Length: 495
Image 1 (cartoon, rainbow, N blue to C red):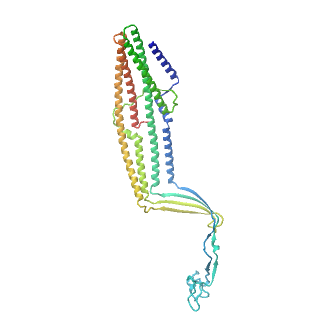
Image 2 (cartoon, rainbow, N blue to C red):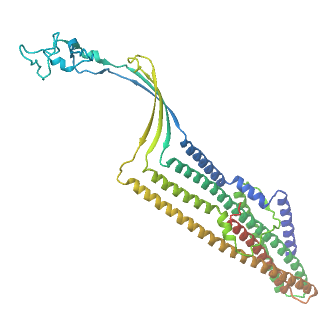
């Protein structure tokens, strides 16, 4: 009865697997990588950062060209401007104060009592060459003109000013060039970060794909192992019914069947979990059924480590990023040094003003243009520039040390992964040899069991050894493919 139930369970499992396979999506490694790169959010984030850095680099390039600005101003005044505090009396210059030879006013003639015709400018005391003065010691003139205080008031309530200005940097000590170089380095770094992120996504996708392919093989192995035990169970039960073996031998087979069922259940759960992980990174719907399909690929065999470190240094984006960081440090030092030099710029302006300053401040627009050169020279700032320069030099030194550290880390990583790959390759060879021996042992045990020369326990032991050898062979192949993928990433071959 138990053997019939076991056969029915196997048949139902096969039927369910066939039904499920009809709705499954067969996915390859290349398709998984393509979907992961297309749908992964981290890749899209890296793309956005790269585009942002590219725009910043373009913005930095515009600093080489002149800037043109328009400035407009409107002001409404409440009170007029007054040039005089009080009314004023202005002395009138007589004609005798004009030098007939030069035709110009001679101040000395204002104080000469012998100048003819009188009166002279100042009022002289009778019979004396002295002249009268006021309380403040100012000379008193014969004639004055009156200037009222409000006559010198001016102002327009509404004033307008529009200026079109152009400024072209002529010399900045190298600031603009250094800033543009920094923008270029940042753009290059984000580009390399995008490539590095793509390599990480590809490696992670390969790991998840190989894991799914691995557990699928283990599930197939569990099904085959269960079928072998079911066939053996039928034979052992027949032997027991005929009285050739003890009940203990039958129980041993049934225990193995239970173990095989648990093994199959674990394999199915492993397939579901591995499929979920692969669907997450590829962006496929989590409810979709997928099956990994992988054709045997030609894997490059690394026989020696010679030249691999140099290849990694030439290809790894991390090394390029470290070099660009050193370039940023050098540019920062140049910017700090440029602060000791003057800034020189050319200026050009064309402006409109209302009231018109060129026509008695009439209520109309007047216009004019102006050109000039401006220069700013730093003199002293308590050595603030010196401290900033020292900070930039220390930062540059730190970037250079990080670059050397990156070289050492790459060399260490390549060396470590190379020997891990060699070890994985050795495990594949040993697993293949063990599997061949287990297969031969299984064939021999099956033939002897049919002849009745070995017990069912011996056959079960041979089946168990074959199942273990097959599992180890699958693991060894998967580990080797992963080791090669990691080494290729370390060499900068991905993508």
